[in-house]
Each structure stands twice: as C-alpha cells, then as structure tokens.
Image (cartoon, helix red, strand yellow):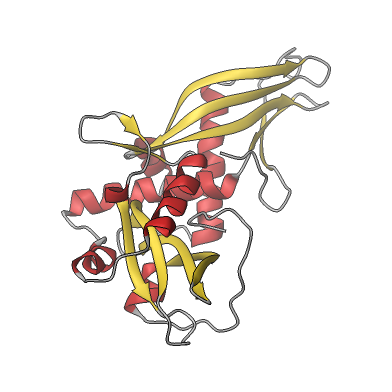
Length: 258
C-alpha cells in the first residue's frame, strides 16, 4: 500500500501525557497509542460517512491493530514511525502511523492514508452488523454474476493486480491470508454515462456493508477500451441506475474510495 496522505495532510489526535517530563513518546504498541489510532478512525468515519451510528465499542470490537512495531525513532524530535496491520473482519491492511511528543510534552498520534484506514474499519463494523442480523447486502452485486455479461479478462486482471498491490488482503475459509482472486470479484454491467455502451462496476464483498451497498471501482468504455473513472457505490450506480455525465479517465489508484 502506498504511504500517501489524505489531501497532503496527516490527521493528528493529541493527548496530554500524565507527566510532561516524559523523555520518549509512548511506543507503537502502547495501549494509549493504539487507543488514539482507533479514536482517529472513529472521528474520520463520522466526518466522511456521517458516523452511521458506529460507536467506539464497535470499533474496539471489530478493528484490531496487530504486529505494531517501530520502523524508526528520531531522538531529536521524539518521534516513532510505526508499521502495523489493521485487521478488520476478514480483511487485513498494512498501515503506517507516528507517535510523537511535542515541545510541551503532549502526545501526538498521526495516521497515514486515513481515508483507506477509516473506510476498511467502517466496512468491518458494517459486516459484523450484517452477520449478527443474518443479512447480506451483497445481493445487488452478486446478482449480476448470474447474467451472461462477464467483464473482460484483462479488466479483471487489472482490477485484481491493483487491489492486491494496494494490500487488500482477504482471509479464506481456513483463516489464511491470501490475495484477491477472480472468485472474490463482484461485478455489474452498467451504462454509467448514458451513451449506450457497457461500462463496469467492480468490487469485492469486503467493501459491502449493511444497508450501504458495495463500494468499488468504475470503468468506462472509451472506444472499446476501459479506463478507470473513479470509485462508486452499487446502490447509486446499479440499484438506482444513476447516470453520471462528463466523466473523465483518471490515473489515480483504482481504489474503492477516493
């Protein structure tokens, strides 16, 4: 996964240490550091998705920060740079964050690529809700697999290679980590811009949530070739048959969120 920052900014949450004379910040695996990461995630979910009633307890129960370790420590500015794995209900994602003391002894925790981290955490909570309720909101996307329309092999390969490169690891029925395969890909044939051509929505079940549909990547037919135009939601694109005009190809990473 690329270590990019959302809009060039590292999101920061500040906690005042009990002792202002601490010589080092809490370590990467410290309970306080992990707790602030989860608070950052919850705050960002509330910001970008309205919260959807997601509680701190749901984040605690469904999002785990595993294998936390320091990749470096800058003694001059008292900052740990950390790597870990976010494990959320069947999907694991490499994450990067920092733990630092400022000049006043305050504890600053910053999370890289907060959009993706928050989104996967949200998906973990919503998947858990759906499981408890005995429901599955993947039907909208799954239905398309029963039709005769199938995405071109080169488009499927491109989708899988991109998602795997970004670190979207799935967990199989035996509890083993593995990369995304064809059987994990869900798709819908759509005419997203109303030009009469077949465009494609591609995603995986791990980006589906209770009552929210599925999020994934949208590909537009341009003179017989498919280009990525952005992320989309199956409810807006398929169930509601919403048409989007003036779409343009983009070179951004083909992620389920932008």
